[in-house]
Length: 390
Image 1 (cartoon, rainbow, N blue to C red):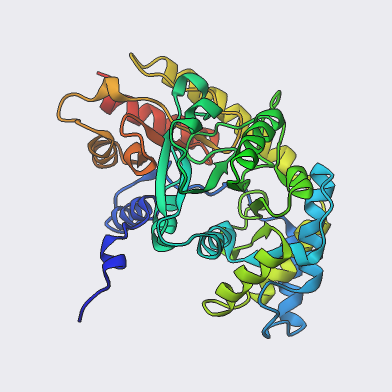
Image 2 (image 1 turned 45 degrees about the horizontal axis):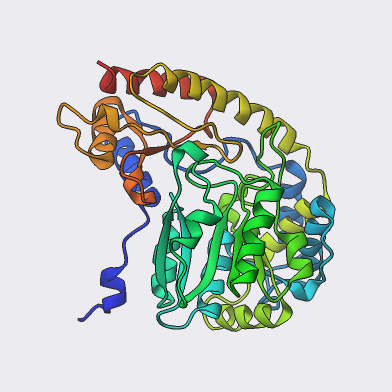
């Protein structure tokens, strides 16, 4: 049997690999704390659970239209009006199996072989793989920790070529938690528009932003320039629905049709029961976010205080998501040579799972998730310090 070259070239997701190793150690009897997975530790709101149960009781288990139920697409379009004042219709939205499928569909619909994508780094682990599968070329645009890991127009100008097709933005960022202001997002989008570069804005963490920072979105910019922008979002983080796989994209109707073609020939509609749960989420209370944001901001400040006490360690203060991305290169000693060996040592000796920064394009760093309880976070950091800070 011959496995295709594209699959041999494809690297597995680093976060899922770490999670699998964590589960393996736990199965062997080891106590392991995971600060590796991007999954909130809060419960799914009851009204969303009830909607899923009702959908099952009502027999809502049949095929739906590929891009989603009309009422769900309308509710998802209304999200952008509710929070950002951007007017959209149901045919501007496709519902996908998490934000990940929306991104994959976009790359497949927009890229021809050799087209380049400007990707600010550090970047989410799956972006380069998706671009590669679509036969595009990733052009990483390094961002400095001195600027909170946010790119500038000057940074982009150094990497743009006549083959540049897409600028991919992620705010708040996975893995850094860095978040652009509305003014910064608009400025980057205006630059891309002037270069005839399409913008994909991954806003999966847009509701997890901590004061004084404010949520920002390119959906109002999309309303003015619908042929130049697509916005990706999901309910996975905001409503603790990671396993139910609810993503959605805002785009021009022609692009939505193209994405629907891809989805129709691959997965078809997302889970029908999930769609009814998603409608309940869109149309019901969003109060869970107040509790989550309060807890995450508290944990962020705590972890920054702890990391700041470690010699030589620096870490930009994130304004959103639930990750920090500290520069730990000063701790590369005593057999630790890079971010992967550091994470391996911490996992084996401290029983704490992290994700190496190499997976995100910066081998000086590691990603630490604070989507765990305060007590668990404190214990994990204490165990890490005993291994790393000697």
